[in-house]
Image (cartoon, rainbow, N blue to C red; front, top):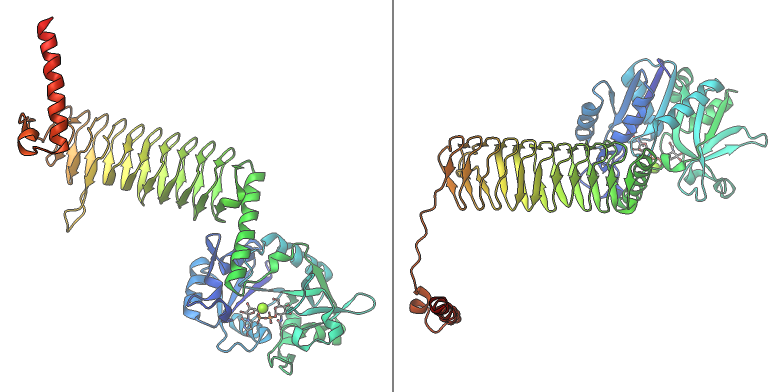
Amino acid sequence: MGNNLTVVVLAAGGGTRMRSKTMKVLHPIAGRTMIGHVLVAAREMQPERIVAVVGHQREQVAGHIRELEPDAVLAVQDEQLGTGHAVRMAVEAVGDVSGTVLVAYGDTPLLEGASLRWFAAEHEASQGAVSILSGIVDNPFGYGRVLRNAEGDVEAIVEEKDATPAQREVREINSGILAFDAEFLLEALPRIGNDNAKGEYYLTDAIGIAREDGLTVGAYPIDDVMQTEGVNDRAQLARLGAEMNRRIVGRWMRDGVTVMDPATTWIDADVTLERDVTVLPGVQLLGATSVAEDAVVGPDCTLKDCEIGPGARVVRTHGELAVIGAGAAVGPFSYLRPGTTLGAGGKIGGFVETKNASIGDGAKVPHLSYVGDAEIGEGTNIGAGTIFANYDGVRKHRTRVGRQARTASNNTFVAPVEIGDGAATGAGTVVRQDVPPGALAVSSGPQRNIEGWALDRRAGTPQAEAAEAALADRGDAEQGVAES
Ligand code: UD1
Ligand code: MG
């Protein structure tokens, strides 16, 4: 498409029905803001430029648009005097437009680039002054109606509040997306007045103006009307959010992903999945998460901006900015915080929390541990209940464990500290000094038993009774042994 295409995105309205301190178009759906979705669709047309019209909370909105689309032209509409006025602000901000101008709204998250491309192609083929992306709906209330004459030619758009009862019966509505010949648009904008029920400058009046001038106008109904549906309140936000999710999940299933329960599976727009991935019930794949071939995720995981390697298995896990290697196993009940990387064939097991931790190929942290600011070498096994004590109350420090080490249960590694390749530790060790390669570190003293302590110090308690009974039994047994 068009070297000579300008896409105008209107986003100046207040969105008061959202009752939110966040501007309507900045509310997220499927991991992108609403206007983010529209900008992606606009970009797919490879237009010469995108112009965004901002007004309410313009700093917030403009900042966001600049982040997503640094080359976009930002037009400011101080007062929302209507869609006609908004487009005038857009044209003034550009200075000079030619070719085709396509107008869309910033609050229609389901809009697809392919639909815009199709519509712009219809418009350009018609060589008309203006074209309407229309839709046939059961309940047209609130929309501008497309009025056609006896021949079926489009004559005008009339807004709900200005329509006669007969006009209100019309079920062909203006989606709001219009395509203009730029020359005609420049001509028509100053001729649009505000003498109507809302006292606004209606962009839709341009249709009547084109017809008065004897120019061609077309209306092209879109089959998938939902793509042009706007969000006005939180209920619509949820409804369109669910619809978008349904579409995203459906697309992945068509591309070869097994999704056991689409209803409880949430996949953001920017997630990527390879073939033969399996997603079990209750999974949210968010942000820029990617899952490679044959991996199985779920049930019950939330993974944001994570990279899951081929054939990995992730069960009941909450993860963010973590990288899981090929064939690795995570969960159940694991908490992967940013900076976690797990090598191929490695394991992060039940009730393990990790942060800024790189765990090597085949290395395992199977049970009940905290691994923060750590490096664990390939093939190493960390015993159950190990704490990487990374925080001295002021600063964070790193712990390095070499390859093929075997550390025992209930250890504390007091950072900064290093445990060498092939080293070992005893149960309950508190490692405060470096352990050389191949050494065994033991920090708890030798065990001392004070015989009869419970009988003496806990006399009369169930503890003492149990001890007494056991000792009596043992006495018999020992005698038995002695007798035979
Ligand atoms: C508009 C159309 C109507 C169409 C409907 C589809 C006009 C006059 N009417 O009506 O034919 O059926 O959308 O949803 O165009 N905006 C600005 N500045 C303004 C006014 C609006 O940026 O001064 C933006 C809003 O933020 C919104 C969009 O334009 O994103 C539409 O405005 P809205 O007031 O909702 O128009 P409708 O009355 O719904
Ligand atoms: Mg509206």
